[in-house]
Image (cartoon, rainbow over all chains, first blue to last red; front, side):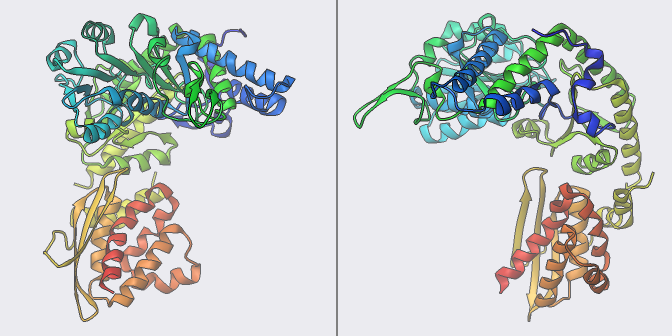
Amino acid sequence: MENKIDIQNIKGEFDIFKNHPTLCYMDSGATSLKPRCVLDKMNEYYNMYGVNIHRGVYELSFKASNEFDIARSKVAKFINAKENEVVFTKNVSEALNEICLMLVDDLKEDDIVLTTELEHHSSVLPWIHASKKKNFKVDYIELDENNRITFDNFKKALKENTKVLAITLVSNVLGYVTDIKPIIEECKKRGIITIVDGAQAVQHFKIDVKEIDMDFFAFSGHKMFGPTGVGVMYGKEKYLKQLDPVYYGGDMMDTASKEEILLKDTPHRYEVGTPAIAEVIGLGEAIDFIERIGFINIQKKENELRDYLFNEIKKVDGLTIYNLGTDSPILCFNINYCHPHDAITMYDEDEICLRAGHHCAELLSKHLKVNGTLRASLSIYNTKDDIDRFVKKTKYIVDFFKDFF
Amino acid sequence: MNSDIERLYREVMKDHYTNPRNKGLMGYKESSHKFNPSCGDDITIEANIENGVLKNVCHSGQGCLICCSSASVMCEVLEGKTIEEASELIRVFFEMLMGSLSDADLTKYEDALEEAFVYQGVSKYPARIKCAALPWKALEEVVLNHK
């Protein structure tokens, strides 16, 4: 692996800051910016060996296939899985949908899928939709007074016929990290299949799927400094060796006739057609990038940024903050008497990028009884200067709209 | 600092947001409901059309300042107009928001658009065009259905 990267000078790795020197990007929860090495790696594929994989027997195709397989091996190591447990999808949403579609046939009427109101739509909507067709139930773990998932409330929600748990590891709105291990342990005792949404986790801390021992895990490349268009569906080998894929077609079967399709072994049976080759290879490079910085350094910097952010924003009057004491560098708030979208436009004037709305987690908005919130989500390339600009502008917007009432 | 968007907010939107005209549904039989799921803007427009004239137009709903004020301004500007006049102004308003209205047409329609002319400034904020347009889309539907 190449030399280590100094996190203090990390901005230099992201060329977008050369094109937007005053960009204050606080929307990494939606997607992270991409470092030069990832883009270079993808360009290298297109320029040097940009052909299809696992088909051609010529040298370039062999090289492309090899790089693709190396990327899978990097992903496997990154989450401590076996290579045949790592399936590439287009993103976490597709992965979570596929898992739902593959498991749903085994659910009977009156079975229960347990989930939470903290979920991203991708984690919960597939189950809500399927439950209407198949008449099983979707139950919700009651959130505590701080809107966190707790083990006690999880246990209270368990019923005899709870069959599946679909749960977020890190809330994309509030940044809370779920205390997942005891929950998974209890599910194992009861034979409940566990699906963990890791979209907001993998970029912040080390995930070990064997240690957590969930049955399925999913994440996207683009939130962890990788390209858009590639995600990962992890499943335990025992499931992936026997489940029926959702999609059928090229490159996923050994032989086919009118009578029978003989599927390839996992993970190939789940990857139909030409995959996002450059993106998969780019994701492999993003993992190298993270490892060259080191999760210890990432967490240290993100915690410092989070603490500084909350410390400073708490001094501003006229705000409602929804996630004090959060675990991630995410601030969820509203400016009193100001619609989130009006605020966003004001921030945008100063090149401060935030997200407004339901953040694809409308069940949580309904639970909080708000018509949307503002979210500032930070990453390794943010600075205290970004936070100072954001806080100053926030004060300005509070004063501007105060004048309206 | 006094940016374009701030002028926009101050000039007309503040007045119409804090003191909205024609707010509250009156039960007129012709109505349309529009919703923007990405931000939650939610507007219902009702109209009382007599002899081809928009005799009364009212609105109800919730959303951002740009959307709610735009509904209020629209009711004030289009009330009393014939269906033909209203349809033309709605079309012109959309073109103005998209920034595709010629300078000659901007001058031509400035007086007819009255306070709605201020929303020309929204064209510089592409992400907000749909906020300003939403109530006008609802009335456009009412007018189209009437025909």
